[in-house]
Length: 210
Image 1: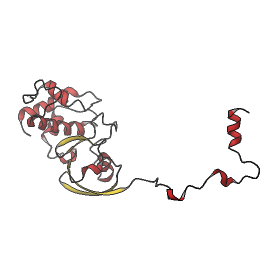
Image 2: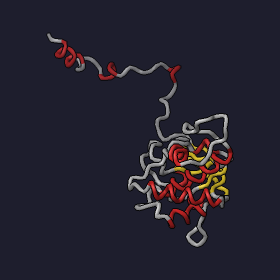
Image 3: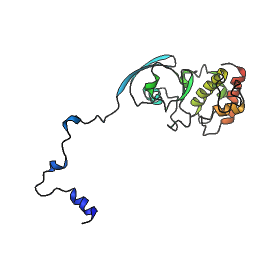
């Protein structure tokens, strides 16, 4: 008898054998079957665009899904959903975060700013106005993440936060084309509007309006 045949026959009942023999009762000390349903929910409180937000979410919910699906702030886009394209970039306590990789549960008590919190069509943020002026977008899908990332990037420079492009780590980083490209490299524009985006950011930095 081959091993394959033995395996098939071994899975069948022998004459007089009860079907219960193939499903042994687990020891009593193991208790009930573990819960396999949806994750545990928790209550969260944080501030979004200067407004308090109180939510009860599955612990596995990302910050991006909390913003889009629960708070209906759809400006932040879900692009790659792997933290590679930057379309979902928001500001958390002033620092840029790719929200598709950040869990909502980790934002308890934090201040979050999305593109909706920067300006309105009637009163645009200086970066938004510069993007419009310099045509820094085509399809516009990446634009919210680009603007949020650019704002944080300019603040990083003013705070003296170094980057990989900073040649002398002992000196304060300066705004240069190379420095800007390095700091914005996490934001991808599939339409290729990079030169216009750079022009928009450069104008805002030179005017010092932030």
